[in-house]
Image 1 (cartoon, rainbow, N blue to C red):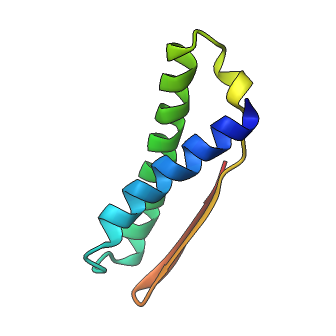
Image 2 (image 1 turned 30 degrees about the vertical axis):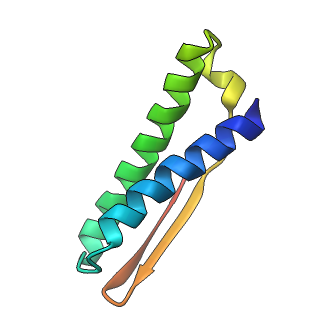
Length: 79
């Protein structure tokens, strides 16, 4: 199930970041907030899937690393 958790996390985080970064106008502090929000959304996606399948969230364990680089700055996250 970890492979499913990984796919869910990456998909959710990337969809959010693609939408947020489409304007390419976030300053570095906003980039950090965007990465934090992407990780929250990724965790929520995994939690929803675990709940739907009535499984413990730990069954979908994964590691997510994210780096966002724009002309205005960069932000990274790891969970």
